[in-house]
Image (cartoon, rainbow, N blue to C red; front, side, top):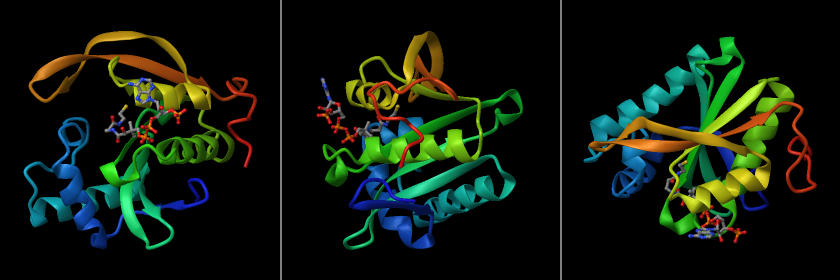
Length: 184
Ligand SMILES: CC(C)(COP(=O)(O)OP(=O)(O)OC[C@H]1O[C@@H](n2cnc3c(N)ncnc32)[C@H](O)[C@@H]1OP(=O)(O)O)[C@@H](O)C(=O)NCCC(=O)NCCS
């Protein structure tokens, strides 16, 4: 799947260990994902195997975000479907510094959101975003997710319970910005 003109989404590969190493050094990514920190090759390989297992069992669809020009992996986006029996999916995404500020996360979220709503027919998609995370909130709202409320002490992030703003997009919601989510 494409994520804008210059990036594509593909399943994780064992060759993505350098991306995992880079993400493990980010101050925030390991706190909200299962990216191992400190990094070790064994833990990184286990991370990739976990992503494969999620896809194989239908627990979710994890993708690496890859720069088309040189096939360099620069981030990740995942669609998590453990609550699919209740009609809900959730998404998470991150980029390494190299790929930030270029609209890549927005394009990736637009692609996976459209696929989840249109092709998989997921009734409701959710995002959990910390209130300070303006870049993530901006991206979510651009795509049509609506902020529904603040979940207090929702999640352990590092050594603290943190509040999360919940954003949702329902299958059938109108577009936020005049561009249909499901349009190519
Ligand atoms: C969240 C993340 C994926 C966003 O990456 P990005 O695509 O580079 O985002 P950008 O820096 O382009 O910011 C997105 C938008 O928010 C705007 N923005 C960013 N910080 C802002 C601020 N402090 N105030 C107002 N607007 C802000 C940007 O201008 C941009 O809008 P534009 O494209 O219309 O100019 C990236 O920062 C990341 O990986 N963070 C760590 C992991 C994370 O937080 N994941 C999300 C968890 S919910």
